Amino acid sequence: MRRILSLAVMLPLLVLAPATATAAAQSSEESRQSAARLTAVAQCPPTYSRGDNAEMIVALQRALNDYSYEVKGPDLFVDGAYGPKTEAAVINFQSWYGLQVDGITGPETWGQLGFCTW
Image 1 (cartoon, rainbow, N blue to C red):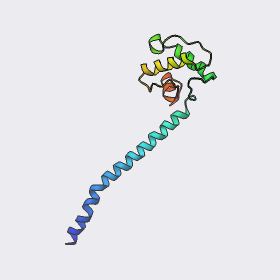
Image 2: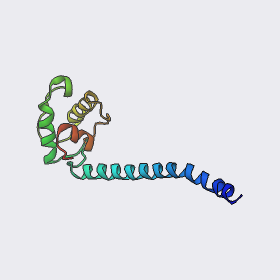
Image 3: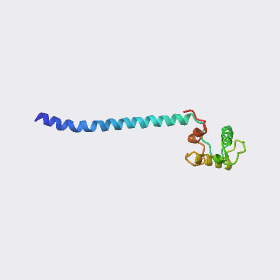
Image 4: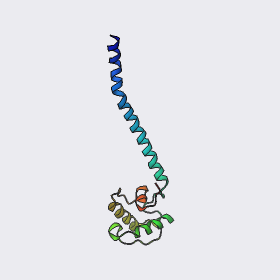
C-alpha cells in the first residue's frame, strides 16, 4: 500500500519536473537575449529623429548617400540636420530592408547601416 501511495505522490512530480525545467530554461534564455539587446543598444550611436542636429547625423547622411536611389531616394545634402529629406531617406531605407518604418534612426537602423558593433 505504501508503494502505491508513494507512486501516487511521485508520479505527478515526475510529470511536472520536465515542464518546470523547460520553463526555467526558456526564462533564462529570454533574460540572456534581453541582456544581449541592451548590450547592442549600448554599442550603437544615439537615436536621432526629425529636428535633431548632430555630427553623427553627418555620418548618417553620408552613409545613406552611399546607397542607390531605390533604397533611400534622392541624395541628401550633408549638413548634420535631421530634416524632412533625411527623415524620408531613413523611411525609404527602413522600408527597403524590412525594418520598423518610423523615420527614426535607432539601433535597428544604425545596425543595418553597419554602425553598431554586436
